[in-house]
Length: 296
Ligand code: GLU
Picture 1: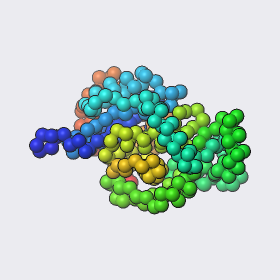
Picture 2: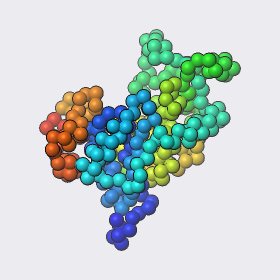
Picture 3: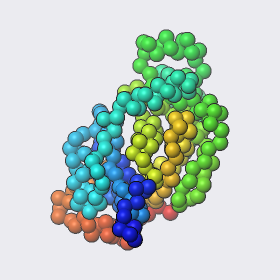
Picture 4: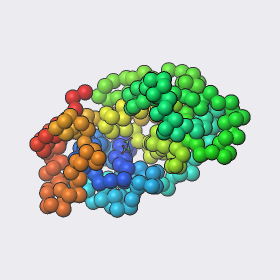
């Protein structure tokens, strides 16, 4: 609340977990930072479940996310939002980008890509190896004939898109103004072969649709924001302010993750730990043994 006790309707922040596993301490930290960011500015804090990957998303994980957040004392406003209920809006935006000639079908399989990387080197982007652009050069008629018969994804022609928008900027509250370099990520997939939409497109559309004023999320998504900014410009969406927070790291300096066996919040909760105190400790910078905050 503001000093006059009013909600500031202009500040809207979200926590947007994917329900493909149990939340761990890194998520608790991310949720706390986003929640506190909203509350300190008397803003709204939304919970958006990013369940576009129907193969990996499970309802029991959604339930666990809600229970974990309640246990941590991180309350959200309004109804929980589900991306799986918004598939038509993603398809419509993808159609617009196709009509602008900015998406092309890609038939490359993982093994094609591996082979290409072996032959021609592996151009590393900030988020891993960058796509070589093989299918960008296909004859459009050949490509559309193949698209009618073969499984394919749709990629954004980033150079073409950036040529339309010209230079773009966005603001990170921690790191200042950024001039985008979306080509560093290569031609990202917006419509995967096996999913209705990719993260980059869904998140950009939803941050606009949900009226998010400040995107508060981990710094591992810093580079991806250049793609989101590009999509905002192409689709005439507003640009929020960003705040990419530091990440919790394990004793090897690696980001916490399910695959690295980081303890889930549900396990701590079931063991009778006090979630509220856990969050108080995270706020105070007191972390369990072996856990630290990234330095960037
Ligand atoms: N669903 C994404 C994740 O869990 C959200 C990322 C974001 O906050 O933009 O990583």
